[in-house]
Image (cartoon, rainbow, N blue to C red; front, top):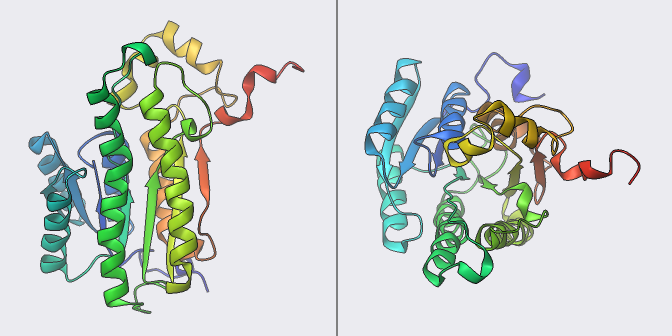
Length: 273
């Protein structure tokens, strides 16, 4: 019987950590996981006020949450964040590797610092957080009353793990790396009952890409790339995350779920090519 066939919240009793959860997609994911019954760590690197406000929103809705500051590209800060979570709540069951950023420039103008910063946060950050989570999953093992597996990792990628993106070489490279990092972890960890999957959003209305959809003219141009003819909302990604974090997706690992309104369907060919 599916956990959704009962009256219990689908993630009741589980403990989730969402990186970069103070705004945008991460904030929507944190709220959705809490609504599904999980305790949620709202990780942030900057913007403490937003992170603590998100915690208060979750608590006001009847959920349980706490904010922990950590730069996911720094090994010592990641280790300290997981140690604080485990000390407070006993363990971790779900990791959502959401933290990410862009520093855009044409290739010939891109600085090494901007290349490295994006790789450090978007790719190395997912490695460091996943490693810390997996060590705890393996230490604790499966707790059947919570989940069928020892732990779940959801890696936030992008449609640009398959679509080249001129002017964004660092971002596209980081997301391509996330794709094979996720698949390799999934292959390696499946025998230990750890599931690893990815979500690749398309155009989503978040602060990182406001210029792409803020005006009617900009949105009209963007919609040419989206067969569904709407720009996605953070909640579209949040609902997919809850499913991948639940036992309803128990036989899913190593998969990338494209939540993109069809952006990866080569919409330029919709008139016969």
